[in-house]
Image (cartoon, rainbow, N blue to C red; front, side, top):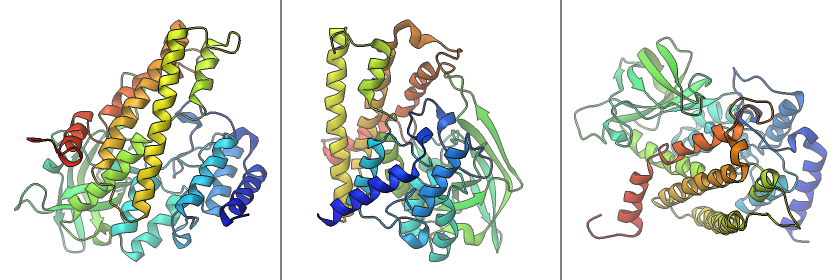
Length: 390
């Protein structure tokens, strides 16, 4: 047996022994997901136990160094872990902007003290983070942000407003772009700060969406004091850090997939006749989607392999983000087709309070968040296809 074969067997045995049976079922809504943090209430003892066991193993952030709370796994070992979790339909032990976005930025730009202070609590689900990027006048044109951080010696005094701040009303801390210097171009003078959402002067207001839910918030900052040691990188380095973090955000959004096999979900709504879906048109759409999905997964795996070898993801993150979000929207369109009239149920126990319809509506935001599809296509045209005049 090769080392990877041994690792696979050990991983399979460990998961069988440590993943509770109730954590081997599909997540039907955001309520089933574990986000961690000070305000999070576990839905069950099994959910709490699953997080604790995976965090102790370092497998909530498998490839991070062990001294930062990670598992120290290679990319190939991480892929095996994902495969073995999928084999038993194990739920993610932790959903975390800290792992998906902030963590990679801290690993690259943070001081050793910051890494040791913030990364281990992230892997244990003790701190829930939100992202303070977009502003009312600076959405796709993020560099036009106007939230100011005034240098007051040993701290910054932050004033401004953020919008579309995901889960801000439930988050413990925020990683936030602020303007520390207005004398240069709009891309200069931006800095990257971390601060507690319970700091004096921080206020959040949920934004209700067409799905009836409020995952986004407006965030108001009034004379918020932020200690200097919570500045990541150097002052004025924020745009460089922001761009790096956005590549990971776009990769995360693009790689978004439902828990559980897609075909099984369609079958659940349509039922089988002689081993086949009865509607030939829907059957063809499902087959086409499955092929596109496999092609996309292989592309993501290839790009991750290239980055592991030292290549920069760069503009490719826009490609992954664009196609991944369009694929996710198509996925839910197909589920709505399969569900028929039942998919329109909004408030009932049978529909889990309209989980499918609400999720379908939520996917419409995929092509806006993390940079609109139009912005991603412009980046692809200019930096990947190198089209004239782009």
